[in-house]
Amino acid sequence: MKSTHVTRVIAAGIVLSLAGVLAACSSSTGTGDSSIPGWKPDSNRASNQIHVYALGDAAAKAEKAIATTFNKTSKVKVVVDTGPIAGAEYTTTVRSQMGTKNAPDIFMSWSAAGIQPLVTAGGLLPLDSFIKSDPKLKSMFLPSVFDQEVIKGSSYGVPMRGVAPVFVYYNKSVLEANGLKPAASWTDLMDQVTTLSDAGVTPFALGGADNWPDLMWFEYLYSREIGNDQVAKGLAGDTSVWSSAGSKKALADIAAFVKAGGFGSNYGSVHYGSDGSAALLRTGKAAYELMGSWEYATIGDVSQIGWTSFPSVSGGTGDAKEISGNLSNYYNVNAQTRYPDTVKAFLELLYGSQFQKAQLALGNLPPTTDATSFVDSDASLDATAKDHLTFISGLVKEAPSFQLSWDQAAPASQSTALAKACADYISGAITADQYIQQMQTIVSASK
Image (tube, rainbow, N blue to C red; front, side, top):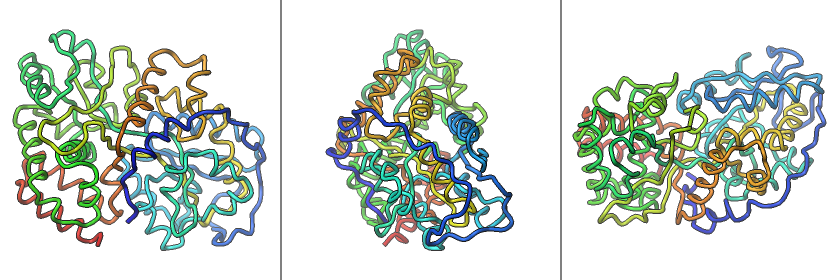
């Protein structure tokens, strides 16, 4: 498995190298086939169409908008289909579609570990020929991000959407009404749980019905208690990490938070999608939510929303500035696409000024070498959006390390079991010892 630990130098580069002006991408729109190694046509697919499969979240409107622009000059049209909002469910759907007439031409992924089975099966088109023809498909992106989906020297993914750390969102009105400020320490946060609960407010919204939001709490409390380096070792198969004193302390922290009412009492029936947990935060029924930067677009009305880093934890060996989340999403290409030239032309149009500005408006900081130039120059961005993007860039710049989300860092064969173990522990279905045993079993397959 590829290392998921990103050094401070690389993390700082995500911000410090964001300068310059992006030249307009090529607007050529191919209409036929190319002799690209690994490609073969699928006669069951519709003629003169390519399908882009995106997450079914608020950010999908950016893909739809750029497709509309592309289709004005292309004989082969781009159709944007949307799927589940959760990455694990989305990935499962993609795999079930591959090799069928419903298979997308372009789809999303999160890491080398996630796409490795498709690469091994020959299901993904290497993008080296695309890049040789248009070097900007690689050079316009930060190397630390682009290289995450380079496998055995071949490039399989083009970064898309944005650098997506996880951090704490909060409702300003709720905190002010209860005489609180955003919690900076775990002790302070535990005290606020009591205050908010007594006031009839759910301290933290959690889409517990979906499992994957639960992971974020483990990612950060393990990061604070043992540090991202140890987390990476544990995910890579070092079973001793999960039985360590720091691991047990992180589990105790989580258990204490749940017992104190940190997630309220109905979190197991709340979904992240369909305006679930985000609505609780937006409407003031919850004070906080731990979520990735995509939350900005999901919330919609952010007039009363603020953001801050995850609290420090006293006695832990991890750095309080370490972060977790997703380096980026990636576009991958189906090896059986009938129109690779059109696919290439569409990828080239992405991250022109229209797409980058659309991403910024959604609260996403594209992993390109010049993203901040758009933040500074885009008059259409309001002050709140700029503050959000500036916070993201500062969070990444100051991070000693950036730990990839656990379900993306782990091989695809392990991610579902990993998420379930975390959800089961939060719900009380398993004990700390059982959680440790399950994690040791899950990660042992990484060796």
